[in-house]
Image 1 (tube, rainbow, N blue to C red):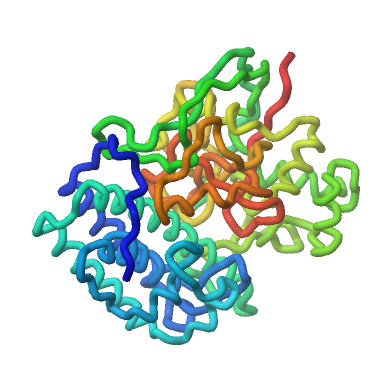
Image 2: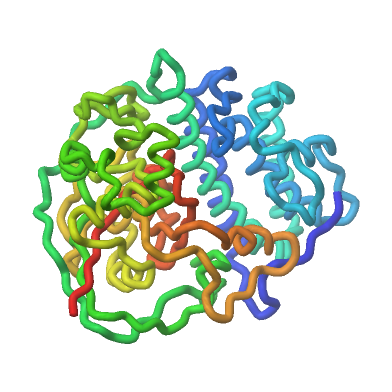
Length: 430
């Protein structure tokens, strides 16, 4: 395997090796826990081109550590050189890869072989760490790899949800459904005066283990006009009123491309909603809809149309981040498999900024002023996707704890709705 160049600035300080290796074991074990309820047949299903089989997630995250850490060491011999082609995702500078829409065709290697692959790579990483064989550049890639694996933990759940929904038997990933959350939090508006704010994060802040992707940098000033943000996300019950008012039959609130999309796709309600509007498909199977829980699995088109229908708009990502800067992501609801009703508001008056649903913004996914992608092959991680996508903020109920922060920038194209995506309203406040 060919080596790859370092991706972090030379002046950056590497995180603690001992802490990273301990976290490595925890994150890798968590992925196996998430995959444990799946059979070998479940693990190879690919229900649509945008999704990937659970087996592929298990293998690709392992490939990432082998390719970008182990293979950078002199004389390294790959576990299986042929798998470099199978489990590369989109790193063109590393070499060719198996086509994404055909990942469900990979009946071989078997699930057992993939799990053995994980174990071998984990052992090799641990051995390198035990002999001080990981330099600063390797440790930075290890930290990136851990955050990358947490992203795939979320994708594993969202992808298997779509696969199980596509199965006529509608099996449950987890049978034990939790109780509904708190009752409805009344909607109110929080005014924000016009001001200059600062958004974004550094790549490797200080000497801590804090982490940010390159697309979150550099921190920079933005001019905010006077506006107001809703104190909580839009609920299932509120969105249902939009449907019952003919929202999917009236072109008025829809963007032109959005109206064309719902006509072409035959959408009449959000993904995973039953036609009776009283039930939703979840990772617990079909469940009664909680009218007070955040509406989720909306495309950008649906989120934007609802906002227009109520005379509001989607927030910009700068407005959202400025509001979230005073909130602690660690105070979010614990991890779950479906969003629950918003609890008490934080010190700034906002509820469920983190850990409910990914919230669409009206900001196109593009580079911040002064943005520089990471060096080498890792530079393909974010920057090359800055085209025809929208920024989402906040993290969802299936985002791993500790993985989100105020500056985190997720992104998806307008029609995407298999993720746990919802919205928070904004409006101008002149």
